[in-house]
Each structure stands twice: as C-alpha cells, then as structure tokens.
Image 1 (cartoon, rainbow, N blue to C red):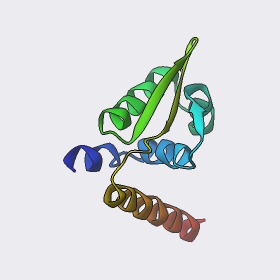
Image 2: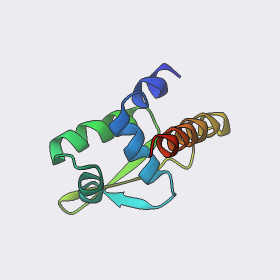
Image 3: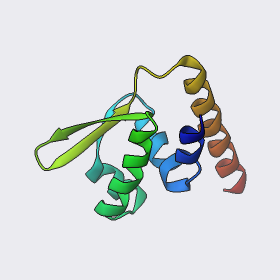
Length: 95
C-alpha cells in the first residue's frame, strides 16, 4: 500500500493516472503533450506508477504505451477511483 500511496502523491502522476485510468492505451508522447512534460520527466513518473503496479507498459517501436493494470485488486481500484474523483471535485470547485 505504501508504494501506491507514494506513487499517487505527486500531482503529475495523478494526472497521468487519470488519463490511463479510462481503460485505453496511451503513448508516452500523448501523456507528454497533455501534461506539458518532457519525455524524461514523463518516463520517470510512469516508471513510479509501473513499479507500484498501477499501470502496465508495452514498447511500441521508439515509444512506450501505458495502460491501467487490469489485475489490480478491487480494493486498490476503489482507492484510486476515490482519489481521482476527489481530485476532479477539487479542480471543479476551484475552476
């Protein structure tokens, strides 16, 4: 659990997780563009999410594609869902 909480403690990682949480596969190039992050920075963030077991990666030529880990325990999915929902709610209130 500590690895997961550490992984989602960073706002950039939460934003990236929100993007891949839709069930689709996302190229690191897409994450870079949507989150305005350099390739090296985005790759480091995604590595943390991968090591925590939240996302899976797949090499596709020069790029890496990320997707939600479908084998996460339902309890962990519920935690991530709650964190992402709270993040959206706070962002809507501020906007």
